[in-house]
Length: 388
Image 1 (cartoon, rainbow, N blue to C red):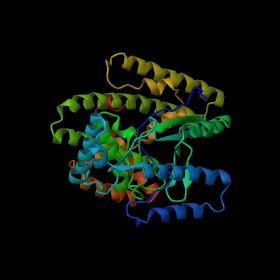
Image 2 (cartoon, rainbow, N blue to C red; image 1 turned 135 degrees about the vertical axis):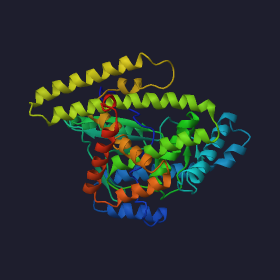
Image 3 (cartoon, rainbow, N blue to C red; image 1 turned 90 degrees about the vertical axis):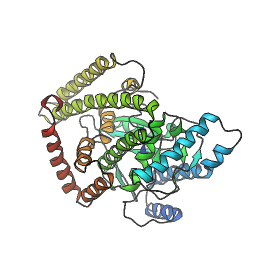
Image 4 (cartoon, rainbow, N blue to C red; image 1 turned 180 degrees about the vertical axis):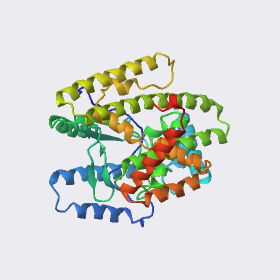
């Protein structure tokens, strides 16, 4: 089913699996113990919940079963030389992550799975018709998340349709990678390596950042932290080996991403003002439609100046609604704040990790207050023309 407002909208190409999760300092249990915890917690749940967890477990374990050591794949005589080169890049990225970025060094992403599809997981995101606050789903181990992941696109679409019939704005986002946060040695996927080198590096750094720090129930903080580590890591990885062939491509991609996010931030602020106003629902719907149309027009004007390279045409073609905007914001909400924190740490990632750990130690309300305080500080430091 392809309705306006949703349909495999790849707002971001990484994610965290709702199947399992843990805080950075939790004791690591064995994988089967994790499964036992999850299913024991579901013993009295409804059949739909059990079926959902079953597809998560079987989907992930199916990948684990098919995974082969990267070195074995590279050495195989029938391996495409281009794939072998990308897998060598992945190994280089993993070594750089532990040596230069102080990210976890383990067996994760050192085995490879060739998928038969573009994405490994599809996340369903929903938001009310007149709100940008996404719906949350709560899980026994991972806490509450602002998305619900499926290993089957058709299953994700079917669930999205049930939410649409109840009046939710819905989007379905294809995901190229996910993390079980250290419970398993997650495999490297063909959906990850079939990308430019800087994008592959970014995904790996992003997922390892989730292993370094994860707060159950705070998706915006988790994703923003991982994005900041991802961006810093990619820049350093490119510079470390003088990868000039990637530097210009990454610069263009980063500039376009920043321009796109600026449009989304403006639209979000305006829509939040509309939804919080005393207008009638009918007036809010009209204002929403008008503001989304303005967002489209502003993107079209921006896009007219781009030649080649990455763009966000697909995001707009698949439909813009509250869920789609909320999903982008999930990965961006605290990025400017945390990038400012990294700058305050002199760019030193280990100092940044310690400062982020201090935020994690706060209660959810205290953490949000502290982040908002830091956000005001960041805005005050910007030139007036850059504040909006």
